[in-house]
Image 1 (cartoon, helix red, strand yellow):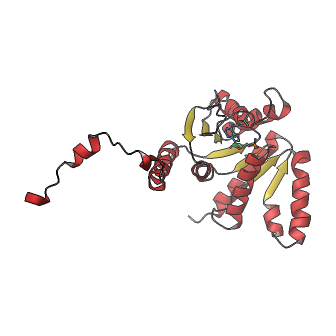
Image 2 (spheres, helix red, strand yellow):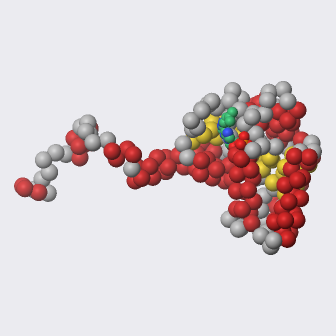
Image 3 (tube, helix red, strand yellow):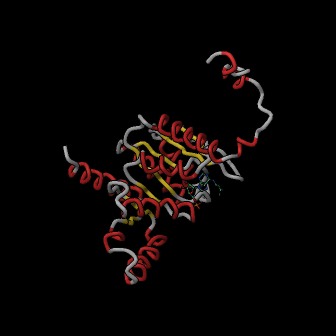
Length: 237
Ligand SMILES: CC(C)=CCNc1ncnc2c1ncn2[C@@H]1O[C@H](COP(=O)(O)O)[C@@H](O)[C@H]1O
């Protein structure tokens, strides 16, 4: 550019000068950049993680409860079986699983989420990423795990469980094990899925069969290891 085509300021000047108008920070195109940045950070942090299992469960589990101990134990056994443990990085079941993985000398991953009542990543997360967007975080749970272990929980846990089931049902992910711990908690839901939902023709019997329900941490890890061995054996060379 020459003469009248030369801009009055340089690109660097425009970049470095303070912008008076800050509305762009709150617009969707800028959010898209932030969303991209979250994917980049998540993928960059987790790319070399190795085999991992995501453990879900209630944020409200009390320290010292039986289920908290179950979360610790299942994580410890997953580490012994060669898996890293991924959680939502928060309190309750997430903290229990991170504690079990951390204390067993395994890789304890926490994928935290920004919440209005933020409590931050729990003390047992060794490799942590904090997300603003739930959907970005949920991509990481699926992408970097070779299976889900689900302890009793509420809406958050059910959301994560049913997302995995939907992705598998629609073949958006290759099949991976989903193991629920706690028969008395989960069986009424399995029963409802296998009767009412199935009889209304809303799901197939194979969708319900995908769910494995166990009572102990050892059974959960055995189920994960066994199904992953079958999946690995059936994979083309
Ligand atoms: C005490 C309290 C409610 C803290 C919330 N702090 C949280 N921090 C991180 N992930 C969370 C949190 N709450 C829910 N989640 C997500 O939703 C699931 C638990 O939800 P819920 O408690 O079952 O429905 C977890 O697996 C986690 O991925």
